Length: 287
Image (cartoon, rainbow, N blue to C red):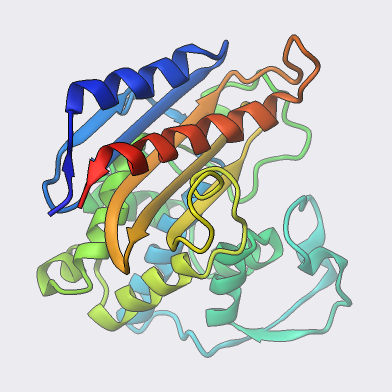
């Protein structure tokens, strides 16, 4: 059982990490096993950036489970998919490549490729994904756009992007994890346990290793999805220790300046802040 050695001490350490920066940091952490949680602004609406893609993946898998989508469907990469896209590698490839919907989901998650995101989202609707989130209990998550406009200003309003809460993301990851052994949890997600196993493995396959994993021992497994927003950086994931789920953390920085007083880019410090939060949990939790 994972427990917090001294919950008050960890909460103080986590808050000190956040208080040391001029920007907003919202988070929720959960010690797996005991279920103890610590949060800061965990129910406050915040830009989701690409952490939203975990719920897009689950909505697509639900549609596949219901027979409305075919994960083996072949999709041709067309030039139009690369328009207004600023992440991933597909935008640099030659149109005409054919991949499956399953592979598009993989690209959307492990490289945060927005060409792949467009491929997936064209087979769903915003209303469907937003309703899906609400139906499973993610009441603080609001899907508003397919791909946010590249020209968004750093001071954009919340209504200009998809938003979520740290609590919602921890809940989603916890439910995906629970579904590995619980039919009830899989049913709550509207998926089979096999599809939930695919979802968890896809999160484990994440290639980008900044934020949550950045200060953990080399080789530690983290099933996670990060995000790059105009207002900050974010990351939500499950951290493993000795092969077992150890803790879940969802952290969102907001109102991050383009440049810190010492000249360091704001996003660098935002990612480092999330890494420090994760490391504190690694140090203070006991399995």
